[in-house]
Length: 90
Figure 1 (cartoon, rainbow, N blue to C red):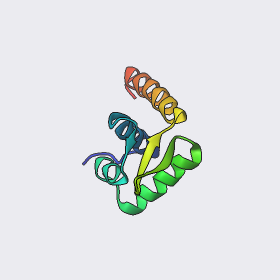
Figure 2: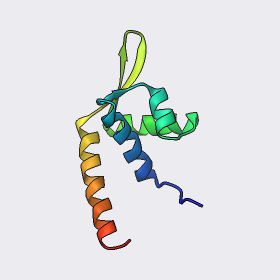
Figure 3: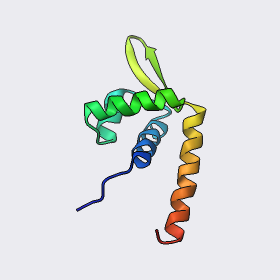
């Protein structure tokens, strides 16, 4: 059985998804790509907005989520930590 993702891994997955979609994505793409329930998606999106990692933007009547500079910085630092833990076999 696969291990559950940590909160930080879920956040990284969401940010990585947005980044790979050009920095701006619809919430349904995050829902399916991040493998999250609707309730968990809403919780994480609000947390990421509050932390300044992403922004909610409206464009032609549709809602999108856009990466912020702080989100890109988190991704960089998270990658470093992952590489370090793998290097030490953790």
